[in-house]
Length: 217
Figure 1 (cartoon, rainbow, N blue to C red):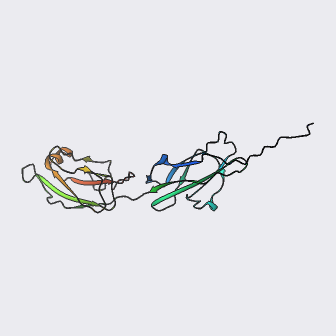
Figure 2: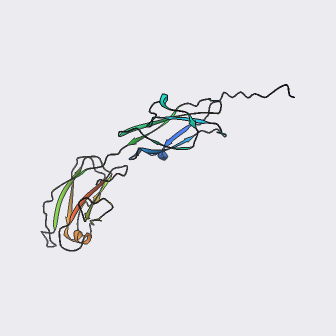
Figure 3: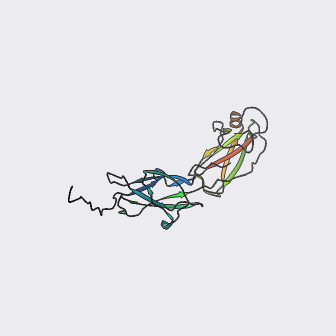
């Protein structure tokens, strides 16, 4: 029977701690995000992590240590704006890393489009009567917009047909647009007919999308 044993002293905290949110994205319209978590230690067996700045653990004191994982889905706290998520890591003998963090802007706003006009509610293909002009505004900054013919007023951006510009229509798509600034759009009868053939009442609807991909309805 041996008269000795080996006892390892380890006072070195995990190194190379890192965290990113949604692959390093700067903004999101979904509060459910994916964290990428890392340490550069070769062996992470028995390691743990603590995450806060999220729903259910908005402060470090509210966070719990859990088994280390390279990826984890969390929910950001409610309310639009910049969110910062923090993390710490500790090894199998509880040496703690320094705190690391990553930030992302949560923007769940749905753009509201307001159409002003048009100057003509009925047009033909006869020169002088073949043009209808309207303007629109959005209540938030948007990255892009498009003007479509839809079959019903509550259609979404995936429904209907975008009006083209081959017949002389103007500003049937574009962006970005600053909140509350007016965009003037010109619809020509030839382009309207190409998007929705035949006579009759056409529903022309403007759709706008924020920088994080949320379309108006």
